[in-house]
Length: 307
Image 1 (spheres, rainbow, N blue to C red):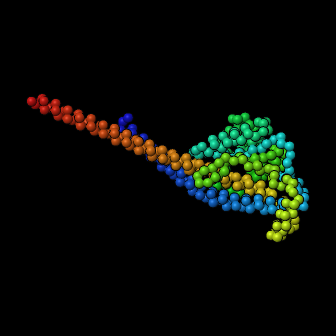
Image 2: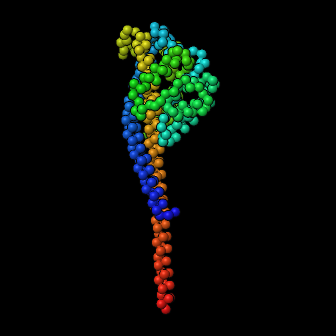
Image 3: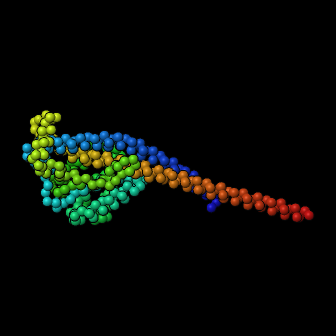
């Protein structure tokens, strides 16, 4: 390879390394912000879940008899004929194995489940998920995209309203959230969360357990107007918090994966630059050596002619 060609490749690779390094830093800033948001919001979700669980034990009748029919339907099991899956993927590339790992995990989960292909109805968020569902021959109930890099609650509320309506109106009989969970450090893992029905409130419990929990709870809380009415207000918040929390987790995992991919790309580019420079120096050394040999040979030839 000519020296000028090697120089051009070095310059092009250096430009690529600058771009991937910049993208890595952008993703790192987004991760730092989203990590703070998702971790703070997870505290709220855990506390809300704990409060609902505590209130549940104060009820005189379990499952609770709510006055609002739409709230009652959210905790009611029914025969499963249609299975809804809210699949959260990316719209953009350059995120490493994020989407492939997510879709592989989904394939494995579907194989382990008892659901047939005809039962599945997908609600896809992201172009990648939509393409996967179409290629696999599954039914798409709705497609949503794009989602901003830092999701707001207003954005999430649109999906929440659509998903809740799909369950209440019996478009599906059970609804799952499928997305990447942020694990720790720079890692994430595939996960499936059951969103609807809210199973924590559709079970019957042991009367003695209820009595013990209720006595402990009444020492801490003053509940008005009643536990049922308070729960009617908290259950929609619980569903909304799960969806919004999933979006925050998914975006955090996405930016972590993109940051890792761009770091690897930058390292590979720098490694390639080092190899190209080494090759350039060797080629240049060979060229200089050949030129010296030619000069020496020419000088020797002139000396012989003089003699």
